Length: 116
Length: 113
Image (tube, rainbow over all chains, first blue to last red; front, side, top):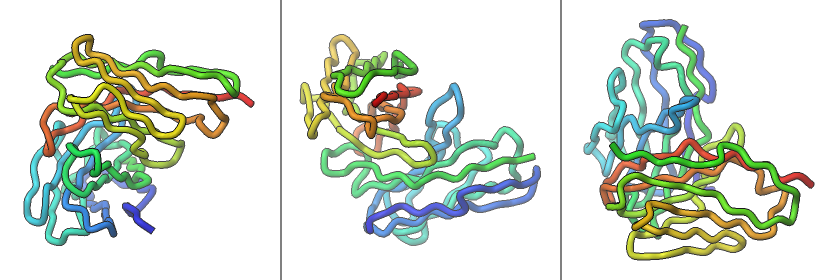
């Protein structure tokens, strides 16, 4: 089954403790992206990647890192999490970017992160 | 700054009604406009994508239109069903194939049996 898999689904951690949220897709997609969703603010892009070894900042990249060493994986790293990073995080992928009719975005089921 | 607005924030209708969800965007230089559905506890599912050169797209009971000059898009749902209950989000793309999507905050739809 074609899917985007995020792990973990739920994570509670403390300020400053490094964590990684994994994202994997099995569709051979070139484009991958991370979003956070907050009440009243909607979905905002954190980082995106057009292909292996190519990553770019989105609208809210501060406090996050990503890497794209393999096509299928796009982990989100929080080196020193803070309470303002408490949010619902989504990973998404598409065949090629966000521009084409035959390249819809596929989303994972989300990771709910709480930083105390 | 580009903004996407969806009104109303919530909508409740009886089963069988035809309904329209609204999306407005501030910058008419749009590359494409996308509609998504989000179910509780799930990610987003892509419904329809309208390129800037198109006026509408259809998929089953769904029809999305785009009017760049007025900065509006609508999602029409025909013969609504309880299974259509979800939050619907629209997103504008200004940057092309590498463009970031600017999302609205969504309309939460409830279809009552």
